[in-house]
Image 1 (tube, rainbow, N blue to C red):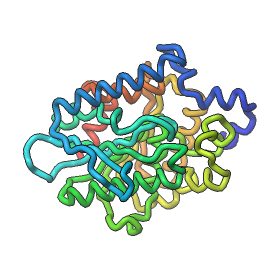
Image 2 (tube, helix red, strand yellow):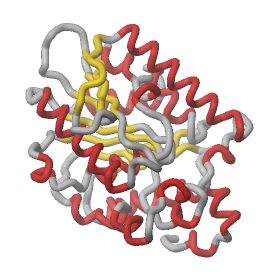
Image 3 (cartoon, rainbow, N blue to C red):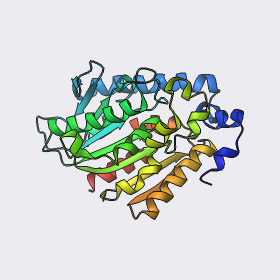
Length: 292
């Protein structure tokens, strides 16, 4: 199972790693446009209803900025959900990443959404470091937080997984990470290097291995927080295989992890629906945070 991707020809591998090809709802040329439209509109709605702090610098580069969606009142003792966007490390931004904030903020949970330098400007090493730096920054901004929770989608799930094996002493803060939800992620980057996705990323095999979370599971042993690996029913077989393999590796290492398949969803609406409080994943996140 682990190396089964090697038996796929280039055309089939690219098909497997093209999430838009697998949607049961829309044509492949429409579903991505609809996803951007849905998440951007959801983010605008969140900005209209939540108390916000926008464009906070978390690093030296002008592009290293994050947005905060805050609960009512001036208190600083609240849990924080950090959301890391997808887009195959090549598109999307924080402007489409606040769409889930409304149901969380109304339950007393702050939300942070951040920009990282997407390819070709950003290399994989740079993106991983930026996500880590942004989490260290939000921890320093709100040291009284009652826990930091991570959620990432697709490429964002990969970046969250890399964050979970961070040596935080390098970043001058040890954030209180108390849970993580990884949705439709990629945890082994080696197959990606054989597809069109790598045209902009320009990863070598060495870089792909270094930044593959499945290679670093042993470094996660200090973690005691719950993790949830999520797939959509209509994710491709390769995306499902990657999630299953990563889940099994975490389980074998004795980490607290569960696996959830969300029926009736594809790679895109599985995350879009987080703006709905009654959605199964929204309820899962609320339970993880409020019961912790």
